[in-house]
Length: 392
Image (cartoon, rainbow, N blue to C red; front, side):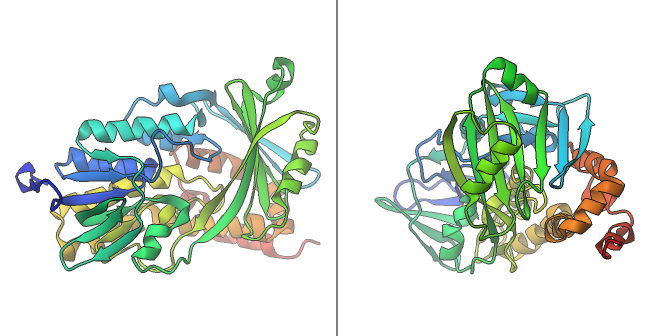
């Protein structure tokens, strides 16, 4: 977008080119790209910044590589090894790379770095600014905020799993949100050392879900996620997982829960001058529940669609849909195939790991590193469909 096209109005009647709602990775990425491209952007965040975010904090290599800022101030630990288990008497697999597979970050710090980069590029950042209403006109959108309105030609909805803004814009929430529960353990060095070399994922630690163990600076973060929206007492499964790891006697602190949207909106992701990105669109990986990769990428795709069309109302939506389909949605569909196999057919999943476990773990690790795709992993679907046959 040419800088000559910027809207220069100021004061109460100002109309921004784009209002981005939500200052997580998706919103910050969108705001940064838009501001760098010459758009007049305001980034609205409900909470004070930097704000705490409930998150495992495992930033996979492909997401880390996509960052436009130096994220080292947010890094707490680096894992070049991934351990994965399957089943009650677990089959064990390990994949290792020369470079980091997962970078453990402090999310409040990471998000702050991304927001400050958007601000540096020219976006106006407004913390403590919840959006409580929306009105879409022919040529703009009015967002109700404390003390008045913000008006913009377009809105990028990046307000996360809550989905409040999308509902205001008229979307029925058809995403599938699953629960996750996490805690921190401060272990003595001799005990921490056992878990310090690898990020661990234990499939079958609870029915239709998995447990994770992430080493951080001075602590171990342990969590469980159920791929069933109603999973019963998730705290029970977390305690059971701690016992399985031999950590039932370790002092637990900072218990925290969060929903993860692992299935996107069934309708369009852009409508009426509003574009959905990140968790607001339901773009978390349905197999791993990892969401930052697609959050950042969708934020930039939304920004590019707006910039490349000059905010043209007739061209933004189809371009965004086409780019999303090619870059993200097709991959999520294939990830859903694996998620149904692993979480929906436990006996078949155990057979998969028994016969092709190392191949599967290596493939998923390459996906996390940005070196491969689910399409490559699913070279021959019949190899996996055969696993759904009853075991002898």
